[in-house]
Image (cartoon, rainbow, N blue to C red; front, side):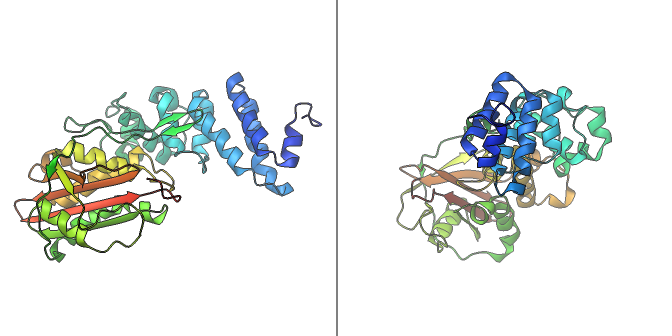
Length: 353
């Protein structure tokens, strides 16, 4: 198909041909014709004037630019805050293949600079704590005080794998669950409400922006007691894969780094249908939750790994295992005699897990 412009673009825009416009975006990337890619993006943005909603194509163009264009072009689309329908936030996408030294001279927005810097750190490629520009700017305190390097106690975080045909979001590789869960239902302990809220806060978007179920509780007792109490509580959303009384459950210990990695992965994701928030946001949420549970949030910013040493973490789930989206953690504080459990689950709308 061709149009007055000689290459088909005008015709595709007039007819609202999403398929051909997406293919044109991909062709631009194959040719590394970034000027043309931005032209297609801009024309699709303006297509609303002719009655066509081509925002998906504009977002796809911005995603492909952030993923593979030279740093100056990639930084431009990230600074503009585009990619609303992309597989993930462009601050995370751009960090996959672009080093900080390539991006820093092109990113203008200070908040954006801070988030991208943290995303680069989470890729395990760079330690930016001594970067003079980041230290001198407000973004240097990025993510509310979480450091611009990985600490020794932190395990590898699960980061997104962005590709030209979409994205992959693998869960972190952590210890398996194998011991039978032994616990009893206890009264919910109101004195632990802050800890329950700290565990719920990073996961609420699973229910708010997707189709998930999120719940947490605190009891006086051990981690297994908290899990048994949580499983016995009512499930607000049916069909999400939440555990129920009668399920055979197993548990296994985690160190604080593994717990942070699992909670950060869940906080970063959008679950089955929601918009992904990014690994930098997930890491901050995990650190803050640990700080609250350890009772050191009033000293923030603080290195939560060493200060959370008395907390005992565990992962739990069904004996047969689960597929789909789920995050189940339990933690007990032997000094206060309290324990918490949290469960976030989600399934696809068609019922598949």
